[in-house]
Length: 137
Image (tube, rainbow, N blue to C red; front, side, top):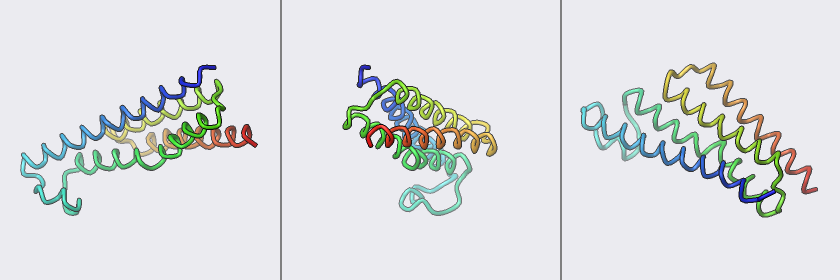
């Protein structure tokens, strides 16, 4: 198994995060230009803002919550040289769940669908972590 294959899902997550940074920037700029928010909002992110600004910011923040465990597990599988096919599959399942989660959050924003996809991603990580710990002990 080519161990570098595990990097492709990580790169895909980085691309998603960078996209969300750009989206957040553009949404803030749009809100400032339209007068919906003042530039001072960006100082501490307090105050009334349009929903699209809040959703964009929260979606970006989400990339530094659950995905942290994903990145750590990628690193650990590489450090311990334990990259297997199951790691590749589970990492892609997690990444796909994050893309779908972002699509739902930024698109039609159905909380039930979003929660279901979040659970799939979290369960995938839990299973992957259990598999990893089992294989290194």
